[in-house]
Length: 214
Image (cartoon, rainbow, N blue to C red; front, side):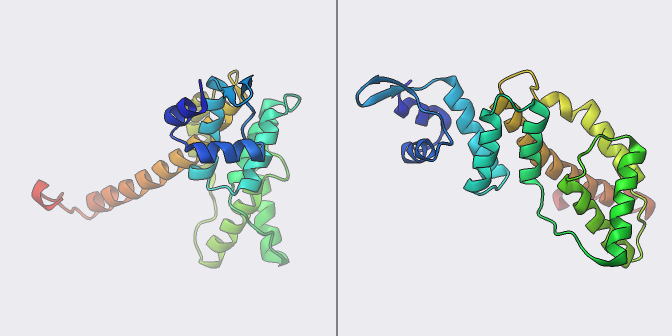
């Protein structure tokens, strides 16, 4: 397909596609004439991945480049390629200091070990979890997150991991990971809030609103 068709099918403006080509985010098309190149399904997949990283993952171009490099590095195992994307979309958390932080990080690491999870020691989620534990402890809230961990594990193993085409094109796998992590995460948060409202109404014996009041 020509660039105009690639633009129409992907929803990405021609000027933006040319920018991605210049930046090396999108691989060059097959040159069929001095001023014309042909593009294929692999270019559509790559554009979908870039849009997922940019619009859903909210990543800057520099971070997108690192993910793309991991995708294009065929010598990098799929697990580590996915990890590059996962870490890129993780919130930036600075490791804390002092006894409180040390205790929280140790608790986070111990929980991961007790669950039997295979997680890198440098996974940003470890510090993110520790930061949350610090705040919970400061506010006098429950810090045993085992029920949440088990619920997360069940969701990932029984539902989410199967949405990622691990044996398919590498950019399609990363796209699915990014979209699933961000969007299913938002959906889960929304569902928890709705469930909290419902359970509050049930326990406090609040009648549901009439349809016209909704």
